[in-house]
Image (tube, rainbow, N blue to C red; front, side):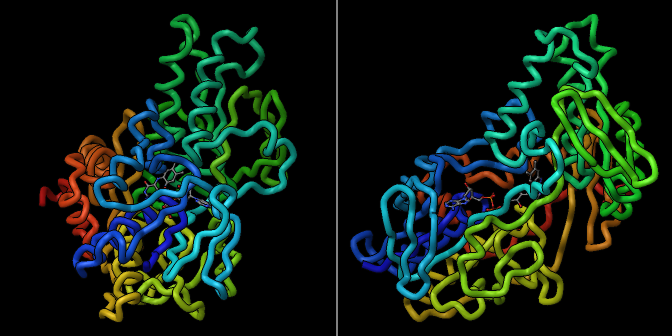
Length: 410
Ligand SMILES: Cc1cc2nc3c(=O)[nH]c(=O)nc-3n(C[C@H](O)[C@H](O)[C@H](O)COP(=O)(O)OP(=O)(O)OC[C@H]3O[C@@H](n4cnc5c(N)ncnc54)[C@H](O)[C@@H]3O)c2cc1C
């Protein structure tokens, strides 16, 4: 029995597993000849990009519904170590799982630097669990005995995740609080960069305008110095600002999951393993990697970005190629010649940019319609959930960019 083992059932891992199963099927390998095993701690695939939203239930896809029809076996456990010499993965559940080919797809985690109070008091939207904890906390606010900053939320980190959450929070919090207290809702977003959403190129001024319209207070050039149960201290070195806040959400960036460090390779500064254009981990036989824990030159020149935009195709190609490699078939190189960014801005709409310099293509309700299609359809497994539909969606092809109505009407 040949076995491909995939670690992680996020965007990269799920699509790796489905693509490998698809290729086995295409090669005529029966279930007693070849299997795909996926190791994941939870019995669901989390559509992690939606963790800034509410409600959260639609962001979970039960793994049974996609693995069952395609014959992929789930080991519900956490992988704790990898022995790439003896080709086995140790788990905290079923013991060791041996592999003929391994696909590492363990994703990334929020970076948590040593800042006083951060570990104890900060909320996050990095995981489904973190997002649920934040929402449960928000719902307790009206019952609190009116401490200072009861209805103040500070979001620290103004990359895409922080901006999407900050844009969403004013309306979400107003829905939770008593009508008489709605004017007390205050949302602040801070970042040590000179501008909020600094990396967003041509969309940056639009994002700033949108946040101003939503009455989100901007604190560019301010770092988190410390936090406690009652709020935060922000600083730019010269001046400090204390903000009383019952809700502080840390959105300070992502780093590849720790398991990536188990492979005998030099990691990049984000903790990612280097992979070649076939998604093979450089210098480690029989191991592939995809998604946030892997770094590929995505257009042959630029490194991939930690994103589902890159993670999903990386998964489809890694799964296909691992199966091809196992049966000495020709593998396919992955190259994507387009790059887009779509940032949700809550009730204001969204912005859509194209290219690595992120020039603005559409905004407002137009871009929001595109974002809804992405978050609600494009990144989900096909709704019909049949083996045929799942295998078709797992084929190693690069999708066209998500369509939007452009400012020039094209
Ligand atoms: C709030 C938010 C908004 C975002 N918005 C966008 C966006 O708009 N567009 C975009 O492209 N990207 C966005 N991202 C980034 C995107 O979510 C990630 O890039 C994407 O999830 C990466 O996919 P992945 O499969 O590599 O990792 P993940 O989705 O993180 O999946 C990793 C999986 O591996 C599992 N795992 C981890 N460690 C182990 C282990 N030791 N053993 C077994 N399993 C393990 C995890 O439980 C998880 O199921 C956003 C992220 C967040 C948090």
